[in-house]
Every structure is written in structure tokens, then in C-alpha cells.
Length: 273
Image 1: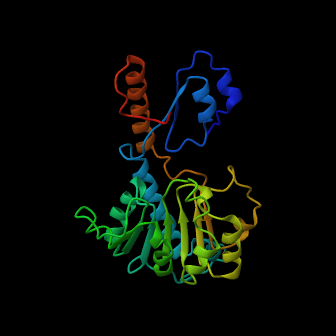
Image 2: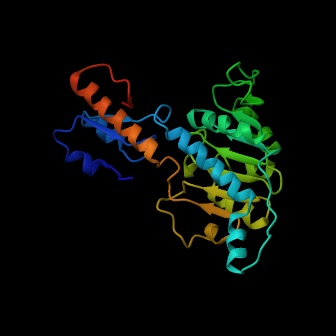
Image 3: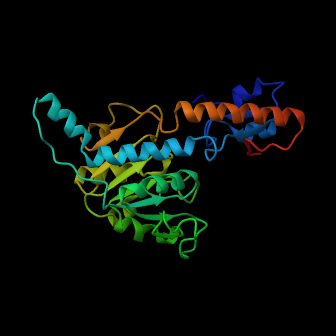
């Protein structure tokens, strides 16, 4: 979680390579590193268990929202039994926004729950699901189908990267398209959600629940108005933080550094510059 800004990078007079321990490069000033002749890399989530862990966390969030985790805690505190009545994940429609490594792992794990899966990603143009996706994704399409899929989903799971086209993609228009009472789960990046729009949708009751592992600023202020609402779940950016993923990322890191230092093709980490 450390941030390597230009001032820190400038001190690395012998530095040749920076590897962020995980997916994304928000923690590194890539431009400053490039000017200093330093290579920057990340560890992909696909083969390390990171995407798998994030997918499991997304399901944990879905079950927590549907079973009304906050209300359950209040019931226990009040020494009551048999309430509140929750909902099942079975029979729900889940829209996976961003069908990359995390999205694919999530689709695999949703199948046994009896969920209808919709998925969108930039590289699709609305064609029928491929053979590999036939049993995982019932409908897929490009980003032009985002609002359509959002309008049909009981749960939207944001799994895409943040870039100029996806920043704030879950905005007022997106939320208005969703069914009243539907939920949003975010295990990707906080910047995918428009803060003001999400807060307004929660307060109005249109958005049934929000579960976030990533936030607009990190660490997130525990006094923030969003966290005062009973239908919000939050975890401290730990979706990919498991012993499995960390052990595998460490192996990928060491292998990648060895490849880089010996002049071999770098395959276990992904160079960004």
C-alpha cells in the first residue's frame, strides 16, 4: 500500500526495477520512474490466486448484503432470534462489469449458486458467448450494453480496471437504470463509483445495498456519511489479501526479478513501461 512518488523514486540512484506487489500501479509514479530510466511492473492476478480471492470476497459481500449482515448484528445485540428474513443468492441475476481475471473467476463460483450471469467488457461487441463461457455467462456484450445489463441485475459486481472510460462508470445514470433495491459490490477500484451518486441512491432507498473493499480515498474516513448507513458493508482493501495469493505473488515477484536481472524475457511479472 506504500506510495512511491517522484521524491522517493529520485532517491533510488541504483534502482532498476519497481514491482508493485499486486494488480494496478496506483502506488507508483510511472512517469517519474520512466524519466529516471527505471522499469515498473505489476504482478498479474490471473495465475497467483489474487483474482480467485477477489471473486470469493465478492460472493462474501453478496451473501452479506442479501442476508442483511448489519441487521443480523443488531438482532444479536438485541438478543432476538429468527429475524431478519434474508434473501438467497439462488435465482438472482448478477451483472459482472469487467470480465477479466476477477470476472471470470467470479462467474465460475457463481454457477453453483444458480445465478443468471450477465457480463460486459470492452473487447466484446455483443456476440454470443464462446464455448468457454457457455456454462458461465448466460449473456455477454460490450460496454454499450452496460445500462441494459444494469437494469436487469439484482447485483452489480464491478471488476474492471480504472481508466478514462471507466472512471465513475457507476454514476447517477447507471444507478437510475438499476432496479430499485438492487445492490452494488465493488472489489476492483474505488474510482469506478461516483461518490455523490452512490450516496444519493443509498439515501433515497433506490440502491438497496453497497459493499466495498476499495474506496474513493484510502484509508477511508470511518465517519464518512456512506458508512453511517445500515445497508453498507466495507472491508479494508483485503479482497486479494490471502495466504494463497501472497505466497504465489512472492514467487512470481522473485522469478520476475531473476528474469529481469539475468536479461531473460520477463514473463512472471508485467512490465508497464
